[in-house]
Amino acid sequence: MVRFKDKIVVVTGGCRGIGKAIVEAFLNEGAFVYAWDYKLPEEGEVFIEDELLRQRVRTIQVDVSLFDSVNNAAQKVLEESGKVDILVNNAGITRDNLLLRMSESDWDAVINTNLRGAFLCTKALLRPMMNQRWGRIINISSIVGEIGNAGQANYSASKAGLIGFTKSLAKELASRNILVNAIAPGYVRTNMTDKLTPEQKEMFLKNIPLHREAEPEDIAKVVLFLASDDASYITGQVINVDGGLVM
Ligand code: NDP
Image (cartoon, rainbow, N blue to C red; front, side, top):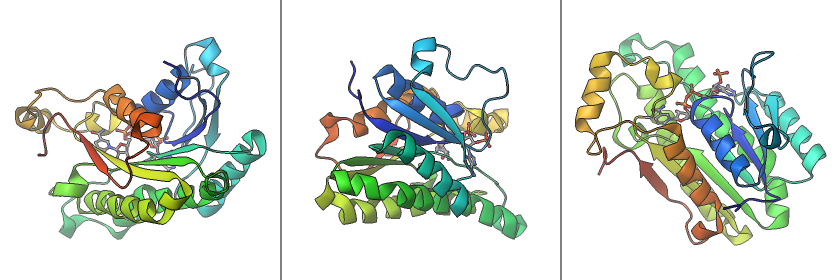
């Protein structure tokens, strides 16, 4: 299936984990993709294996929490491609701690990357979507934004914030045919969850009805569905992709 031929896609945090799986999925379906990331692939590291697909991807170094960095990247995309059709706000970090031990800098870093980042990237790329009266914005939230998690007050607040952001924008932009949705993954196998202890991983798996963690591709498939014409009557929704963990 080639559902995204001629579409220009920006994926933040696109060089690793879930973001990279989203980039690869869009490339496989014909899109031209910009992977924005804090750290770009190392010199000599092959980012996308397939040579043909590699011709349709650009990496741009961006810190999504910084206004100038985001605006410079947006300018590069618009100068080169003249438009943007799909934005996936995926970049995210954790700085876990119980609240009494959580430093101000850990609070700020998580809110600035996960929530302010989505605000800055969306604002920087919104006008061309509005002008062409077509756009898709997909925000990667988390189930902990819905149910909370001890030790993740900063992260849960940022992810809950993304849900409010999604719904408000969905209302604001529907008349311009810009659909805004969020995905709430559960436990996905990436660098982020590598940090969990074996006991924490066991606890998650025990409570997941499907008894497995998600692969990044499980999330990417839902991103592509929401960006596709099959989802043209869906906006302002949060889709849980969590093996049934939250229901
Ligand atoms: P990874 O840590 O593997 O990837 C996150 C990506 O975001 C990295 O490429 C990272 O860059 C990038 N990033 C971090 N900070 C910035 C920044 N300031 N500017 C630009 N890019 C940045 O995590 P995942 O792939 O697991 O997570 C992707 C998204 O999915 C996140 O929003 C996360 O919260 C969410 N999620 C993940 C779950 C999971 O179980 N893994 C569950 C629920 C939600 P670098 O490595 O260079 O720092």
